[in-house]
Length: 385
Image 1 (tube, rainbow, N blue to C red):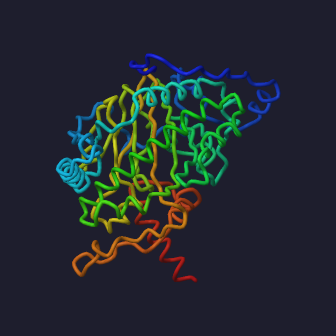
Image 2 (tube, one colour):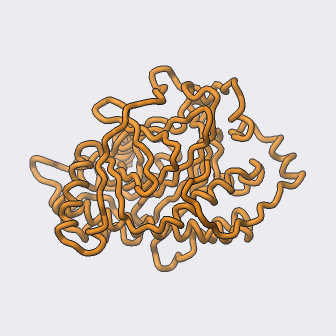
Image 3 (cartoon, rainbow, N blue to C red):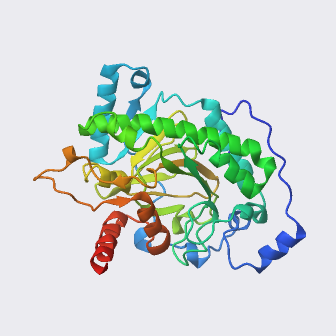
């Protein structure tokens, strides 16, 4: 589904057609999620059918998520900053989700990011597979997760890539996409390079508010994530003729630090609060923000990583842009001393983000207990060594 507010666009790269050799190689591969075919099928492959106890209601009641107006905070108003940090703190203690508006992100950049996502996922499967995600890696194109799992597969395609805020990696996103897809994707790469930089800057501002709300000062978490090494993911959920049998994304908590999500106008994000599922209504001018497991550990459990999922529908493709903020690879995730005392002892051992990433890519399928399982895994490794 195209974004309604698109009024202008950059020139779209010419998308070359697959060669006969690519088509032949595709035919030799095992089962993959080919959205162009499966979106019309009445018979849903068993790999995509979820257990009855995990199947979703497609029409959950809407969650009343607070809107955090960042306008005053970004303009330097100290009273507005205090008010915004209070609302952020309340949301993070309650369920970990909030919406930000007046965030300063260019509306056209958001529209272009959705537009180029449409063009990528409309390519033939063999062409998208030029950026194929390899087993054990977190970047690249994935047609569902058929290469990793054989059951409870998500009804979606994704394209993921690394972003670095370090000064020595100013064009990492563009270079990666052009290397995988070809030089004709240069403008495609430029859009997502700019989008990632905008998300990084926005996330650092949100980290200031989180620091204020936790009483450690506005600079503490901002400095921790200043040279972040983050992940950008394009999510594409095609229609499903039996949407009540499957899920676009299964129930999970994000293992990363902070997620900044932009939904199109279709809807499908659901959040579990007090053991009840709720939907989050799409708002084009707002970003959905939620805390992940890494920040939960960094806050010593003060702020919770929230369980969520995505549902699909019978008629319309759903799209979302997800920026996952992650610390630089050598940063040790350890809570500031202000958040540890006799009443609140350390809940999680020290770790680095690459350690948790490896755990979720090679040893464990992310769900609502990822951080607990990772903690136990680390402790076992320490005992054995």
